[in-house]
Image 1 (cartoon, rainbow, N blue to C red):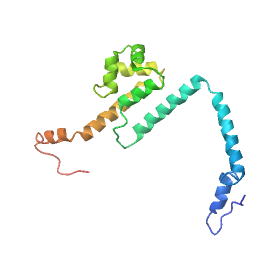
Image 2 (spheres, rainbow, N blue to C red; image 1 turned 180 degrees about the vertical axis):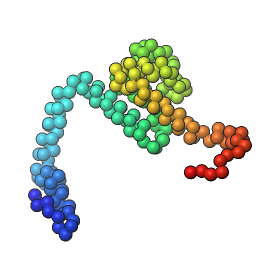
Image 3 (tube, rainbow, N blue to C red; image 1 turned 120 degrees about the vertical axis):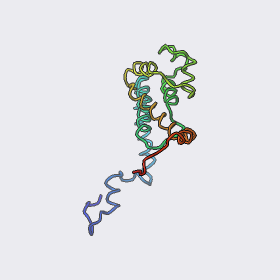
Image 4 (cartoon, rainbow, N blue to C red; image 1 turned 120 degrees about the horizontal axis):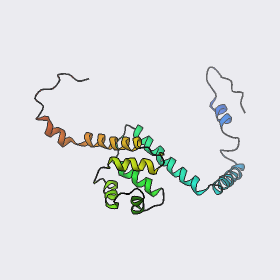
Length: 175
């Protein structure tokens, strides 16, 4: 391993690599053995996972996905309230009909919400909060709904054009 000293005010990249990457991990004869050892350790850890551990991991992944979506400035048609609700249900390995029964919602209403034909009600959002044991709080679901609404507003150019004729005077500046 290198000395870690600066040379002429610059850090030697090979020294950084040596400090971070284990010797022999990039190439060579020992690489296969090292990878096999790593696989066996991961397999042992996976064998010790309980069903609850796996479910927690699936839900954490969904929670992080929602939070990333909410913090992103990008708008996509792929993510929306119904998508996340469907994911929430499927990560429990349940059918929508069974989940609808668990939260006392009509299965047809649930389907309409998942498929963007109806907006979720406050009661549904609070039931999701309760059902998830507050792991997916109502505020999180409301934020997803709010982002859906923001996307709708930005993309509804016809409405904007229709409403322009009703504005007689507007500010002379913009910032």
